[in-house]
Image 1 (cartoon, rainbow, N blue to C red):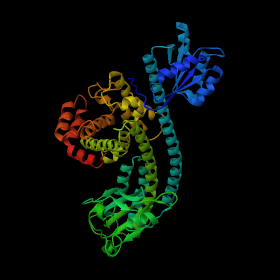
Image 2: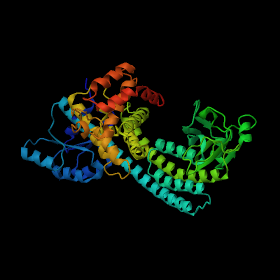
Image 3: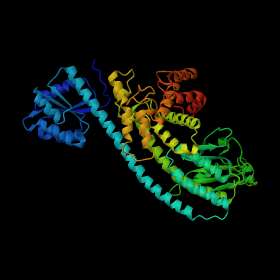
Image 4: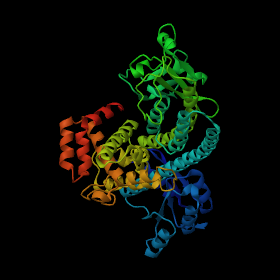
Length: 562
């Protein structure tokens, strides 16, 4: 029985003036159901026919009555439609000079016709697999280029909106010193938020700043996702029982997200919420009933709300001398009109940053989806967990090295995106290797290692804030502390910090996950691996941080099941 790796239909074009050759090839390839064989008996028709068919493999005779087969080899290579096709010379000539000229003009292989059946079929399948892999990689690059162009266009529009908002920010005048301080903070936040690319990190920053600006006890950022309202970020929760709301007027948050109107509730209105009036929508996310509330829409271009910011229980605002001590109740009605204006203004700035981050997230998810199609183990759940774990390890590293949260904010953003895309280079590896059920042989493993280089190359021409980090992580996350990793054999601190962090997070998630070929490892066994491999496979400091915070790491994993 013939065995082969090609799993999708492909075309083989035979260019030969002898009918017997075409029939012989048809007979030999009849054992490959995926192969479609076409024959061209005239050299003058070959180029047009090849461009129309875009075959995976062209079998070319070099001596034809109406044309020179060697010239055809060169002409094939000039055609963009045939850039991924494998070209194999099929000739009776065995002269070394003829073979050398064929390769110089673009041939991938040279067969003296016809070789033994098993060898012939194996060679055709090899070249078909190579052509299909090149075609898939080219498609992945073209898709990425389209996403990049779309992102650049949308970013231009967002930059224009940001400039308009910055102009309105300068025109906004307040009298009180406290109000001026708050506006100064908003102006500063406008530029800071514009630099954050990761959506999760951005939402956390937006909510924490909104809580400080309004002097509130707690808050929730809701985003519209798939026709529902999702509590994307929560501050001050005592017990989170649900993150989902219907996108309708059954809650105050839902009504604000639909109408794009601001709703402010005092103590009397909050006492009725959930009883004779609709609930605010924060009750299950925060775990307690509000005594005052301010719900402000996050409005994007076109006056459509991306979601809303719900702030709960207003306290006295901090003055310049009081710092951020907001433990004294402001009034029974909580928030006032100045809070409403300032939070609404801040939310308009946040909308620009959120839409920008959503565009980046969309591009990342498309890239992850491409990798997931090629490698079923590379799921969105896995890469999301690796990103969460990487941020946790980095935060502990920053604490140990005295790095402030302000200094680490931008780098956390780049690390998270780099971790999400650490294995995206697998789009350039063939299905035969990615989906092989058994262990890879040496040649296959050598090919698999190239996903690190392909991943880094994907970011070589992109000009975003995170491309350098993503390229570093993609290239170096399989390097080892002892220098025995790949692709460059880096050792110790020569390996970029973020790549060392992602290596720890990636292995931890893999060991902790159940797969069709294994059960999830128990906590104790995983800890032993990181203790024993510290200083060989892993950065010893990072391995120790992972083991010391293993319970937190497990809690993070539980938030993103497969």
